[in-house]
Image (cartoon, rainbow, N blue to C red; front, side):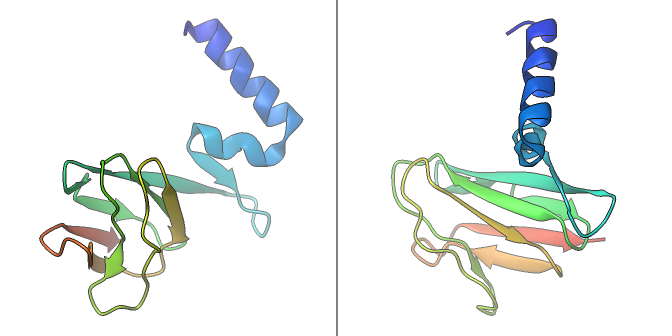
Length: 116
């Protein structure tokens, strides 16, 4: 896709629906005048990619399963956990503190979220 078309599509989406901005990596937070970043972690070949991310408190992380088997995302002390995600499925949550996580179905898969 060429740049003018990509920019036009983005403008149309943002104009048509203020919540469509998540398609370009940000979501408008109605409680503030700022934007909340949306980070993406893919699950590929039995690994979290990237395996370590740094975010700010209140930012969102979306996990997308690009693998051929089901996975979940479980905080090390079980403070939060996703449902099992099939191929192509995703799960998003708002990060409030640093956490180590893993897949409870495949415990060798590990990741880390650092809040700055």
